[in-house]
Length: 295
Ligand SMILES: [Fe+2]
Ligand SMILES: [Fe+2]
Image (cartoon, rainbow, N blue to C red):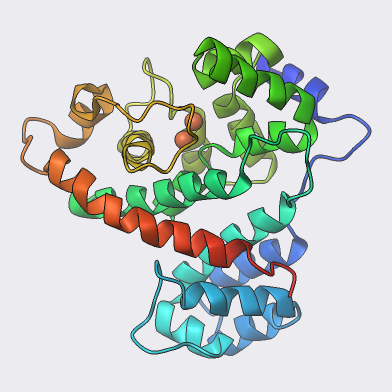
């Protein structure tokens, strides 16, 4: 066992079990990954959980996914958006359910802001991948959505430590990684990667989480995509107030990896401008994602 894993186990395996994704999520993913699965078969499984059905329909009609016509049934949603988008939504819904709003220990931590940042990063990872012709179906969305999941695990299982971490950031101006290392001896990127591994996500997704802050490694395209999308999400205001929004994106090594010699592939200023509009859609979508979650 690596040292990080040892620290992880000491921190997060105590009296309580490690949070787990709902079993219906794992069953649905197995079905979606089977090429012989039909819409009817997938619908039948998801229909067992009416809360998920209504959340999917709400998401379908939210600004980020908005279809041209209103979607009112699960079958419609699967046929119109395709199983891969349903897979992304299922992960999103399952994560919200796994980490509910029930901690009051850290009043300054706003879970909606966390989801705005994560959903924004997921959306932008896909968008940038698309612009640069690196699209890999749901992989980028998963990496973007999960990249900071380690923070949520700290918040959920060790709220007092989380509170100290936030205080170090707000009061001493420390960066998140330094503050986490000081309090826990491990940071959210490593924590998130170990959690994703335990949840059986693929190695690609685990790497995207583990390396999104690592300037020494992680030169793969997928890792760089999440890293840059994370910067853009912050630049668009999808971040906590104590986090810096001025990130020199074009000086980042990941930007070089993605654009190579052709700096015209993405116009950063224009993109920042465009995504400020998109950020509003992300906020609206998070609102609908978190509203009446259990109905
Ligand atoms: Fe991060
Ligand atoms: Fe982030």
